[in-house]
Length: 63
Image (cartoon, rainbow, N blue to C red; front, side):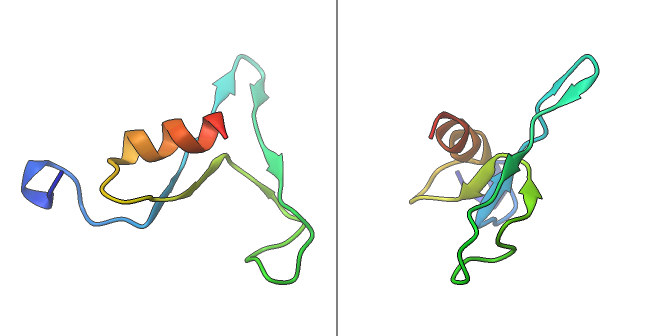
């Protein structure tokens, strides 16, 4: 999908998954070669190919 179809350029996506009284967060790996090691984060990750933001999030949450 192109910008003219409704999406601005992006490299990745994050999602806040909420349930009454709860928020899903993940503890990132404690590796020195990744950004923000050992920090709490929302599910998400990098775009692959021509994925839309929704496709990126769907794949990353599944993974």
